[in-house]
Length: 113
Length: 111
Image (cartoon, rainbow over the protein chains, first blue to last red):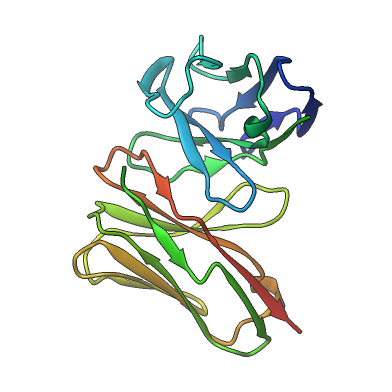
């Protein structure tokens, strides 16, 4: 069974530029999560989707971050404009239904200069 | 905001030693999970504990959930270099699968 796929694996941009990350969850998984993991910290949940609807986005900085999952399968996370403090690994995870184990992708490491 | 504090933050030991990692909170969680993360990879689930006082064993790893479901511990017996990694605990406050992660314990086991 294929795992959670993410791309790109690495991205370097300058502050005020825009960037987008892509995630393809495990086939059949209805729930998708985006996390931000700053170096030396644990992951922080940004947004949770159930199919193509948002379950929780209370920790998403909505002035600059946006996420969508239009067809209930893959998802994109966008940052516009990026700030230095956005440098982090962005992890995508999926689970079959709520209350079931989450499977994580390898992450996208973003460096903002 | 429910916080999970892990201790120690860093641990460097010799192969064959035992160790315990702690995960503490002032909040109650419906379940708590332990993950291991290696460089360049996402966290991988090790175990989920649900019932207060529950103890689960995974080979040389023993996980315990506190009676009040506010804290947990991970004990590794006879650590091996392959145990090296970042150990993360994560709590689910209301069974909605919106996890709060601790800051992690970075373990290095030297041969």
